[in-house]
Image (tube, rainbow, N blue to C red; front, side, top):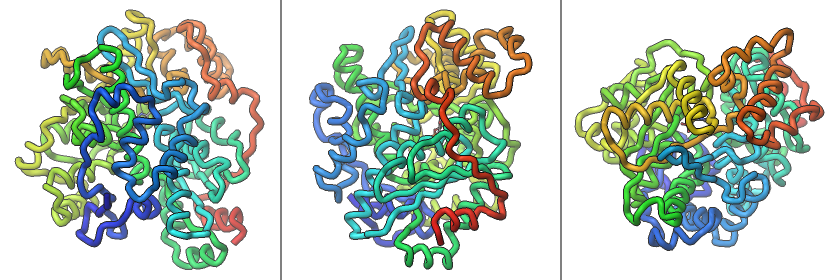
Length: 501
Ligand SMILES: *Cc1c(COP(=O)(O)O)cnc(C)c1O
């Protein structure tokens, strides 16, 4: 299997090269030359555990990894750091299935890919015969930074530096990052917003003089960004696993289509479901759920992608996004794999802020339905499911659940449905309590943001009768290990200092 860029027809490269390069030199994303078919029958898959299915699926995409290498990466990623033996448990609530992707070390779905990416990268480095150490530079608005830190902490041959906006993340998210363990981890608060962090990191990546000094010192920069194909491929696995699981438990018949609803931001998670469908997994509709930043919802309704609108802050912050980077991979497929047309649409997006696709392309995306839920609707959904079924979901998952409920009401489509559940409710405890127990807020008094977050965690555990995940419990009283703060203009200097350049 080779990978080509969505924006040019230059020669295709191997999986390990694509993982190391991250982004193509022409600014395009790497896509597999073709979507492979499922490797064996659905019944055979139904007899496998998570790691075996991961191996069967990933070996079709990462063909320049040996079987031993791939098995070693999978074994190192999906182990006891997940607090569920099945890795991704399925919870049946009323008649829908919540695919819980949040049982990893940072209790959000980013762990599914970021726990394996470091191993894929270090294996790829060895293959290339590179003795250089990999330095991961990441700017984060909250979830990705922590998941990347957990993934790379202690991985030999790597160092990771994470920049976060000093006042732009939640108290729990900050606490998660500044207490990070691992001698190869650095966490730096930036006096600026997320965009400042992102631009600063991009400038460091683009600095050729620095790259030369890095090479001399035996170091090379890389990125753990969600457009890396090494993050997308591991995400296909859990959709196949979920289907196999439903089959094994007799919830569905062999070949019965299942709909999938996904709370969407950068379009990575739902794209993986679409690849799984392309591989022959019986998937009916793909419901792309947005919060009030409903760019994608409008796109699926009209064929026009238009980011020229205000950015809205919601309590599903990981979906507060106006440019969904991974959509480019779908656009490429919709053009019939035409890199010129894809490049021209993406050029229009960056220059004019919008583009419109033609009718032929729209026809090819018939499997998708877009929908959105307002803040109020998602709060009501959290409250409804909790009071009717006793199941607590997080604010992102609630967007997908609300969008699905409306879709079912409006279409009468009663196909069995999986909802991708992307974070533990404990990660967003204050927002969850606001939804299910509005007068609880009166208890806050003089508490700091962090104290209040922990009070909400305790209360959530009490009223839901669920255990506080270790990832949150361990934060209380954990020593702070990262106190470094810098201004935007000091970011490069900070990187040089840390790396001893
Ligand atoms: C990142 C994230 C999303 C959005 O996923 P995409 O792959 O970017 O569409 C949704 N929910 C949570 C909790 C996330 O962390």
